Image 1: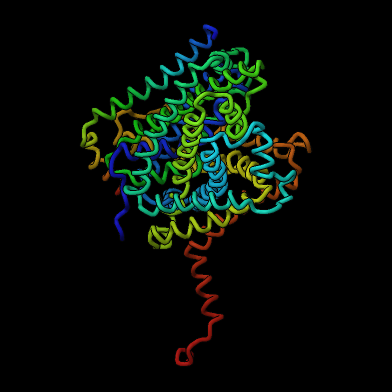
Image 2: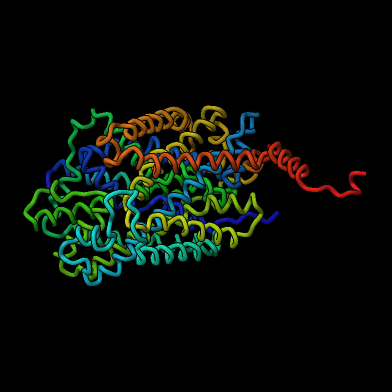
Length: 517
Length: 47
């Protein structure tokens, strides 16, 4: 059996894990969530969520990967068979498949970012940034079913992104992913700090920072605020898709699990905070320039990145320097996340199908690119929006909840705590077990139930105002296919199914005459 | 900028970056042998 690859250094692993956690969500989701949910008051549940759910869950996933040192399907197969329970191997297929699904539309969003890097040198989006983004660039259709034509620019850039992913992952753990992390993360940190310090000294920045940090303590009694804070932490830290488990499976045996998890979680929060300060300082200066209130200029998601920021850059001196810096930061954050989404399925293919990394990554990137084309049509931004909502709010939650139920409720997490404590400077105990066995599963279940009720709400009140058919086709159906596919692969890999297939094969293939006699 | 906003910003940055510094210090001064843990973890792994 070929020796399993390992990280070359602790720093390399840490930077790669942080690169996986830090993504576009830190830049365009966290600041908006904080502002919409009580400003500074949101930070209190956010930090509590980070220390009671985010970091404990990273410890949990690192400990599983480090303890089992296999690919996800093998890990969950072995875990469920520890005490002779039903096979939960499907989780080990669902998480990697979900990760690849997320990578397919993430690559398309990155293609927009790459295009805007080029535009940012000359503010090529013109004066009406909204019309440029939705009408001129995306040529967005009014409905997810009105596919229209493929946008050739987005298609080409998406192909370029899959090619970059292929080059990085093809080179392996040390020479590819680790090297990318060691380059990407320090560069991203420097760029973000330059942008943050530049923006906080702009006129009007204080207006934005006041809106972001001024606490509205009355909101703390709102249960939804706490739920959103836990949701933000869970989605931000790349949990429930198997990337952290897979990355930890490449750690050397004597690695410190708990401290690595703390550093990963804290650095993810640090990137979110720095992004929040940078974005809101920018929005504050824009509000001052337009003589408007901060509420009028605040946006989240793609509109913030591709409409509001270009509007600010249009009025900013030296925008041809700070524009490219901002979009390059986004591209690095996105690229470091997307390469981590490939690894769970790749490691499963290498282990189960006995194929080389080079063949595996080639197959995954080609298939990923083909699937990405679905989001390069004129309806792309709408299909992508639904796919993103469902993969985060149902897929990641299902993946995270399933692993917690299996390990903490069926098996009990003591063996993981024991393993983590053997190799770690900080020890985990009852509090950690309480967090992963009770607190986090209950909160994830509440979030999942709330999301389901939102998705089945009457027309007009459901997510994004989409029709039920649109949500069903691009959301429920996609998630259903991933779960069914995982169950099919699990059953195909079971001994009994293999025997049945062999038996059928022997029945349908003509026997040798000599054998009959 | 209001006083409460400044306090929240300073507290948040101190908590997060302070945590990063403390954890990094532990990581930096960690013994290369990792608490002689290789033998122990091997024992568990082969149970």
